[in-house]
Image (tube, rainbow, N blue to C red; front, top):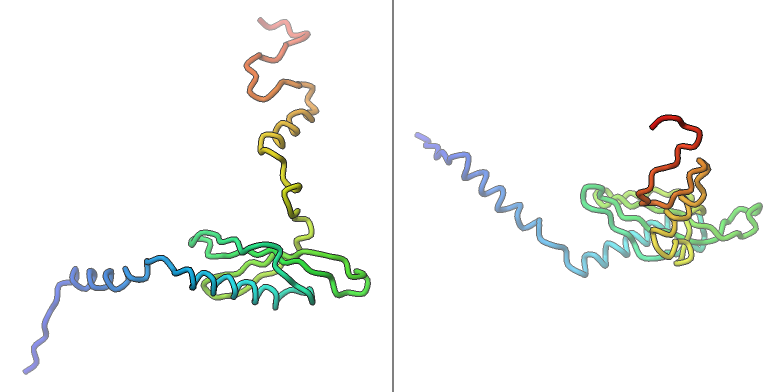
Length: 151
């Protein structure tokens, strides 16, 4: 006669959680270095540029997105492009190691591509306001009601 030992479900659940808890540990520096090298290699292989090279370091998105981005630079191989320099954005899906490529010539590189401060760009936009209301951002003075008879 066989006897079955029944173990309460919470013990199974606790055992499963305990087994999975080791996977939540942070990856080692060597593992991240291997990841970065895989991203660079696969993005270069997928690029249309024969001289594809990273234009910077890989940028990791959070685990919810599960992607790593890398900007690739090189020269277009087509004859009509006359060896013009270009850029591609490579997105690397960490779960499947798939890469997605897109032309990225519109992306700017370097410190001169960004305003010196974020508020400089905002202030530049407010100075170009076509509404005729040239108040500075944050001003507490109400707009004038010229020609308005309302109190």
